[in-house]
Image (cartoon, rainbow, N blue to C red; front, side, top):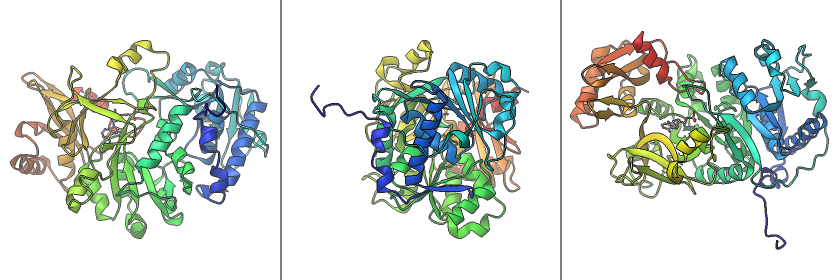
Length: 535
Ligand code: AMP
């Protein structure tokens, strides 16, 4: 090989200049701790050194069980950079599924917050495959546990030089499990090369209006760190030198205080978190800090009603789309040249769609024969993709992998239309779609329309089986004022008149509920809603 020919796209090389270039930029964990980047990169050397000293070797899977903390961020970097594999455990799964994923991923070591000890200790005998538990508490208090062998994070993480290896770029860096609501979750893995490519594309994608992110924006990401590498944002934020605030467990009070005190300007979250924040009883007192806050909403469609409410407070929301299988970023609803100079209302309409593909994402919307549907904003097809950072398959599951990669393209199972100006709008998931009288009712379009009615907080539409039509739509609504079924129907009839929805899409039944059940990643749990209908 010629000298200089091979350069590994690994995390060590990606961040080679970061601690020097942004030496004074801060990383802050609530009011507990803060570090400069320069200290942070020293700490991750200390963590890698400590992990190696207790036996962690290349290829070993190191799990993390925590809220969004500084320790978690240290593991995001140290574990893959030393050649081990980071398993970000979904702490919202039921305990038996947590155990299933840790066993399936063949975890060897676990970095664990004291708060989660009881879940593990209850079934400690099951975890005999774990070679070391590394525990900590926020307060640095003594931890008593029968787990063995037990190490204290602060004891093993000391100031120590550690030379990160120049790993082959195809070394596995991360593993985690999908938030699927049926059966056992599926594992997906990502290599260093994939994470590097994803980080660069994400860094590019957020530069465009209305986001216009620069290094002056302080970030506070409200996507749990177990959910698809928090959408890859920790890596791109640190690469770009953004001040980074970690909120721990999500509590509205803490989030709003951090927004105010740390001058947070950018966040990402699923719609239900934004809804929770905007429902805070004392929101009014944070008004000036909400103004100008930029938020990327992903993981589920951004309901128009929610985006309008955010806009009325000066918050700029835009949609983004991806999957666990895609690391996750595929599209983001920044302005392209077609709409850059359009009226503000038109721009708003596009900023809440699924968006446009980011660099290197080859995205198609196809019919059942994998032929592209026309870009007419009407023809519905499945989104299929190719990009440098997609998972190669489901861990230890060749059958599901084959389905996922049918015909050499990754099949997302998401149904969408492409607008003539290039914007994609997801209208449903294949498995959630309501099929009525042989035709299909796009539940997300219907939810969007309902969300605009004043008094609607959250809404989810699902199909209920029907003798005559196969299925008919039912809307579950959380109301914020005294609206009734008639108000909803009248509101929808207005949209029928202007051609935004069709008459026969109007739900047969409206059910007002206290709350919409959520999946482990905070999305509407349509499976549970359907089960509710059977009761
Ligand atoms: P997960 O792997 O749990 O993050 O779920 C991925 C799924 O979430 C996708 O296949 C979509 O169905 C849904 N999703 C993610 N982002 C969006 C979006 N912007 N609009 C609509 N659905 C989305």
